[in-house]
Length: 201
Image 1 (cartoon, rainbow, N blue to C red):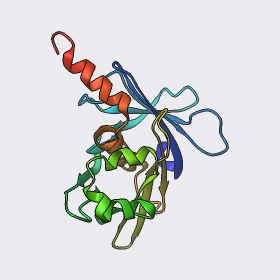
Image 2 (tube, rainbow, N blue to C red):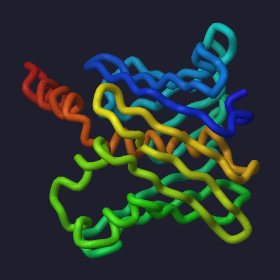
Image 3 (cartoon, helix red, strand yellow):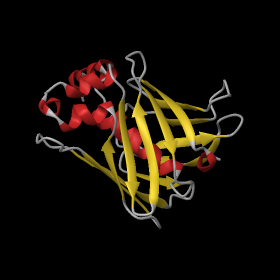
């Protein structure tokens, strides 16, 4: 089950007709889960979360703003705010039954997003060259963290849950928010441009 996964890696693959994240864990060569929708990444459709030996067991749904279990019961919400002022980036993670968690860049990412570089217009492009990492914490909870790993071929992410109460599905929403809204992968920019100029778009 997806909620038993505490440390995982996601590799995203985007086309004009589909969005997919392959989920892997250390020690297993085959994906243990797949997030997928038959739509371009900018569409409003939710990603279905599939597990099982054939990756055909529906576990839930993930969007950049919320996640739901297989019964479509919403688990909570994710939000992100960013301003041009120094130190202006903050994430909010609100899961039913848990205190709200606040996410902030950590490590080298903190230096890029809390100093003068936070004002740079192309700072998101640096996330492909230097790992972007954010840690979520709250009252009585060590929360979780995710990172956009270095590389430009296919965006890759790590997710590590420190609090066993945190929903993996909802934590995946935070990863998907970054990929959908913030990631500056140039191929996604080309897809957006192509979609905008297609007849009837």
